[in-house]
Image: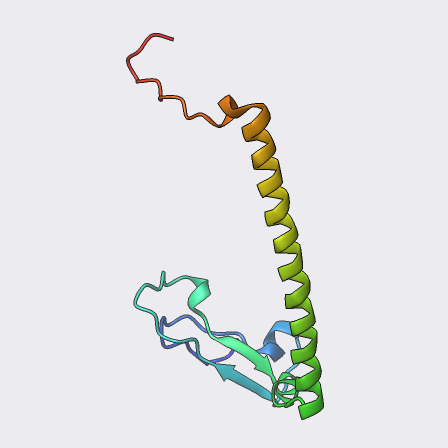
Length: 118
């Protein structure tokens, strides 16, 4: 077990090499932010990131990738907006049909009191 210690509590923190059984020199310990409401249990331990994970974090998407992502999100948003509009129309038609055929279904009945007889 490593001698790295968390600043929130004094319990030792395992590094990635100690978890998988191999010692690796490319390890980074990222401390979690201090929290006033921390429970003091294991969730307050540091997050361990391998050096290979850092290379994937440092990848910046190209302009073309960003534009493609923006376009994909716009298409998805338009599809969801159309679905919301369809559902709103359906609910409106359903509600008007209920009001025409069975309006008592929409009436709010007074709640029964706690001490009233059933």
